Length: 119
Image (cartoon, rainbow, N blue to C red; front, side):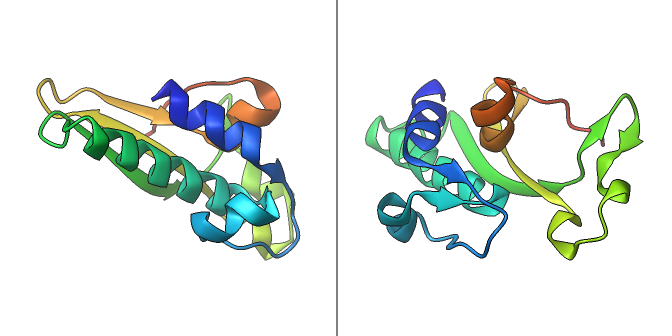
C-alpha cells in the first residue's frame, strides 16, 4: 500500500494541536496528528482495495497501540494526555495471514515505512 502512504504523507503535515480525524476534512486542512494520519491512510488503502476488487485478498485496518524503542515505552516520557497512545495501520494478506504494520506518521517524519507489532 505504498500509494496510500505516499498520498497521506504528501497531503498531511503533523501537528500536536487539535485536528480533524475525518479524511474528507483533512484533505482541505492538511494538518493531522497520528489519529488523522492513520485515518487518512486507512481510507486511501481501503479505496484502493475496493477499486481493484481485492477485498477477499487484502484487509486494511486502523489500530491503536504504544510506541516502543529498544523495548522502552516512549509514552512514559510525556505527561500530556495527547501522547497516551499511538495510531497506526495494519495490512493483512488474507490468503497467507501475513500482517504488516504501517505507521504513516513515522513514515512521514522518520522515513520508517513499517513497524513491528508487539502482541
